[in-house]
Structure formats: structure tokens, C-alpha cells
Image 1 (tube, one colour):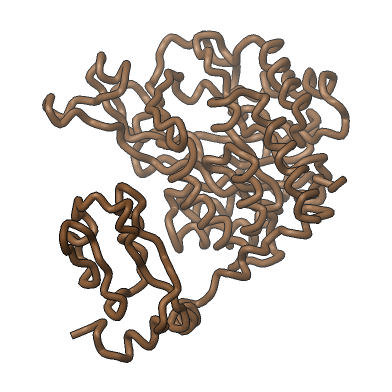
Image 2: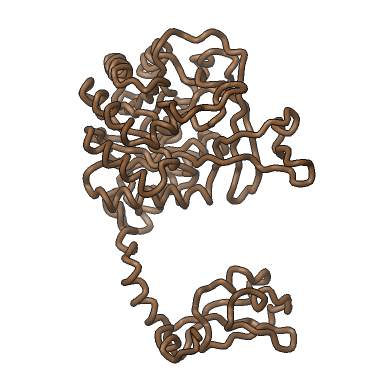
Length: 441
């Protein structure tokens, strides 16, 4: 049987998957009932999670019972194709240091000792000294690893009636700024002996995010988590003056610049940043994948692109803690089926296929494939011939392809509603067709 364990920043984990740092959603009760949160984490462990995260730790005293709230939004993609929403509070959904220390103490008693606890920490004022103090307390309290939260909060409308300004130094505003990240990571690393990592945000963009990763490495971070969800604005009703379409938002006539994500489309930028980090900084920092990771296939994708582990918020929110068990089972069977004995056997192998564009073009010239229409499936809708492709034409209400003009781009395969077009072997390679001079004029 394959060994699905992994090691992140020198810490051994029995599996490379676990639930991300999630704050309680019952925001009207400060920090939520402790026993319910513990039970949730124990279920994650029972289903095979290799680690647990705390909610983000805030400095200061315990918050008063929360009566205000903001509207946070999630949009579901992939097989379900549903929109969703949820309500949560302002930053107080994260837990004050005292609450998180009690939580870690209780967690230590409730879960197996070999399961590492990663404590997330955040300071709304962006003070390196405060981060260092939080780190010391969390280390003394029993945390095995620390992750500085540079991804949450995501919303740019954090406070009722007040937008977050560009001067803010936490959440996405921190994660998008290498100049802010450096001193905070350095102070945190120097304050403790346990590994320190940083949670990235896609809002830093490319190549900005690579600058943040490099800063983390220089400051002593041992891992980064790539990445959180991108920001978006909720869908609007174009027939009703641009009012929001989502439930609750529609009723209160309020839209937001906030989080959008769940799975498939979000995986694309997440995988991009995972691969970029692995390629630009090989062996210099461990990569913890996230951002739309829901299935076992998603986890394998991330590992093949260079990640050493993955965390999921989407998976447990949309499919429950049992989804962790499904991911672990898939990973174990996948590795057995493919003869992989350990995670390292296939970590980063997909990077072998990420090549310079010039090399890819030279290889593409040798391809002897092109489009062909299955006349028995073609309904004559003409969508393929009505686009920008000069190779497709209609004859007797059936699409046809001029092979010498086909660029093998595959656009017609994508647009055909009947799946009547597919690639077949061609007599001439793409390079030969180009050299014939029929591709351009």
C-alpha cells in the first residue's frame, strides 16, 4: 500500500490534506460553542485529515457578543453550477488570542498527538511586534506551526457602511504587498522556533505574487499556501437597474466586492501560482496548495504541479467533513493504481511539460492532427463556420473543413453544441500547412 504521508517544513503529517482555517459561522456567539468546534475537528481527523488549523488569531481581549454582520458570498461552480451565499460577521469571526489558546489546549486533548496543529494569526494593524507576540503565545500554547494570514479578510467592505482603504495592512492588503510582508514574516520567524508560513492571496497577481513568495523566503518562512480565492462582485440583474441577484443581497439591495469561488474555474489560477512558485523557487520553500481544492483529483493536480500538501475550505463547506475521507481514499487508490510508493514519486512531475513557448511552437509544427466533421452528428447550425475560422464552411447544411487551412486550434471542437467535430490524423503536419502559404495572406 502506498505511503500517503508527507512532510511540510520538517513536520510529518499522516496525509497531505486537511481542512483550511475556518471560523465559526454562528457569528452571534463569540467564537462559537467550543465543544461543537472540537467535534468538527475530530470528524476531520476521523476521515483522515493530516493536520488541523485554528481560526485566525487576533490580538486583544475577547470580543463582546456580536450584533453586527457583513454579507460574505460564495459562488458554486463545477458540477453543481449553483450560486450560493452566507452571512458572517466582521473580523471578530476570528478568535482572540485567549480563545485560541484555550481552543488549542482542548484540541490537544481531543486529537491524536501525531496530528500537527497549525495556528493562523492576523493583526488588523499590521504590526510586526504584535505578530511576534502572538506567535510566542501560540507556540507556548502548543501550536506546532504558524501561518500568517495574508489572504483574509477578502471583502473590501469589511465594516457596515465603510470600505476598507488602501492603507489597511491585513488580509488581502497585506498579502498583496511584499514591502509589508517582509518585516512581519521576519519578526514572526525570529520570535519562535516552530516553522512559520504565509498564506498568499491571488490579489497580488503575477508577477507580484512571486515577489511576495521571494520576500517570504528571504524573511525565513518555511512554507506558503497558494492561494486563496480571488475577489469578485456578485451577479447583477440587468433588467432591474443593476440590483444584486443573489438571495439576501437582493432583499437588502446590497452588493459587494468580495470572495468568489468554489472549484473548477478557481483551480486554474490556483494551479498557476502553485506551478510558478515551484518553478521559480525549486527546493527553497514548501508549497501548501489551496483555492478551490475539493476532490482527490484536485489534490493530485496540485501535487503534480509542485505542492507538498493541500488544504480545503470548499470541500468541507460544500460536501462536509466526509469529503476529506473521499480525498484520502482517492489519493491512496490513485497511488496504488499508478505504482507510486510515496508523494515524492509524483510531486512536480507535471512541471516537466511546462515549456518555453518557442519550444512548444517548434513541437506544434510537427503535429499531424486537425479537425473533421462527423456529418451524421452535424445539425447544420453553422456556429463553427460563423466564427473567425477560415477553414470551416457550410455545404448542403453540413459543416466541412478545408484541411490545408486548418490551424489545429480546436476552437470548432469547443463551440460545436453537438460534439460533431473531433481531431483526426492529417496527411500534412501543421508546419507543412503553414509553409504552403495557405495559413496567412
